Image (cartoon, rainbow, N blue to C red; front, side, top):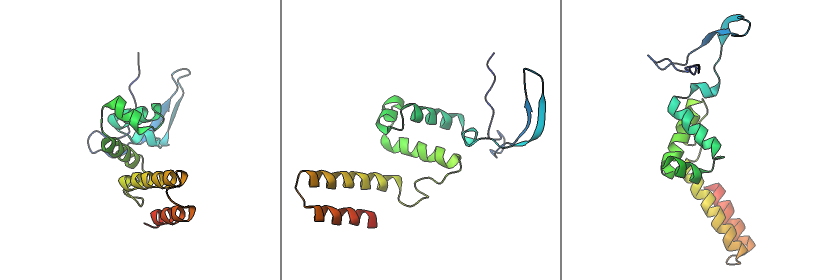
Length: 135
């Protein structure tokens, strides 16, 4: 018989639950106290399922998109939601937005490709890269 998963949130008010008793089924030892749940136990069933898909795909967003049949912005939104639920600041709360970070990476890649193809000089590439990090 499969045991149910521990709830991390109260089904009535959604506050974080607190574990107060642990039990060993082998020797029947019980431990009473107050124990914190892990960050993963703060996630809803849907969020945990998404995180499992994300990890299984090694964080490759295109693979997550394909497996779940959802768009890039939806993957990012679900990832940010799980990050916030775990108690970490999401990309929107920590400086540049997720979309801005993606644009910076794409711009950086384009600049380096232009440099490699000798369409721009090393000095021009350096200036453009500095402009990216300043913005």
